[in-house]
Image (cartoon, rainbow, N blue to C red):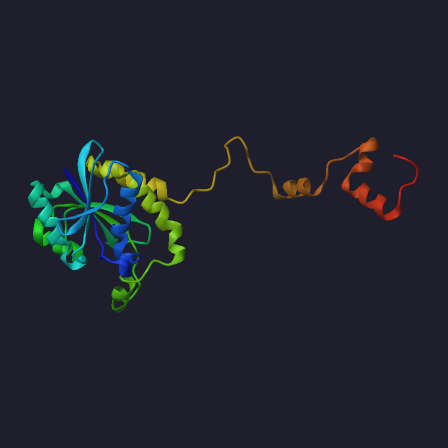
Amino acid sequence: MRLIVGLGNPGPKYERNRHNVGFMAADEIHRRHAVFGPWRARFQSEVSEGVLGGEKTLLMKPQTYMNESGRAVGEAVRFFKLSPEDVCVLYDELDLAPGKTRMKKGGGHGGHNGLRSISAHIGPEYRRLRIGIGHPGRKELVTHWVLGDFAKSDRDWLEPLLDAISAEAPLLVEGKDSQFANRIHLATAPEKPAKPKQDQKPKPAATARAESETPPAKTGKDSKKGPLAEGLKRLFGSKGSD
């Protein structure tokens, strides 16, 4: 059994908050993978069971509010007799730029109250997917920032990121954290401009400019049918027949 926990606060008021990006990731995993059943109430959470990556998996969204997330996670861990390594927590990270992710096992809570609660109930050695939401710049703005909604412009990076997380979720269940992290990076990294082929050297600027400004030469009857000839014909009329 594996436990994937998305962190957030319950209710429509918090639905689009930056603090709820863990809920969003869990919802996207559930939406993409038809192996999961409908959400139901259990372990003070909304949970959904399925077999992902060859392992029985429980998706969880604690309904205890963020600061008490450990009560829900601890209840599920004790019921299924899981070790902390069987648990992967998806949560918002102030100290990462928006759209960046990091996989980590163990460590401190970094001031995140959801992690603080989970560590108090099951110990710190669980796995974490840190999802960057950026920092507002000043400490006094943090609460307003995390409990504020994502801006419309954030959709440009948020939707591809959630899509990539859901697509690669089987790797989390299989414990292939490094491979998962690499796949997410490749899926969300901006495209690099194509480099010219080695055998195609760029032409000198003067040559390129001259080529772009000089129309191909035309001869015979066809020369009269170019844009310039047609323009002159309309302006002055035509003498004789084509």
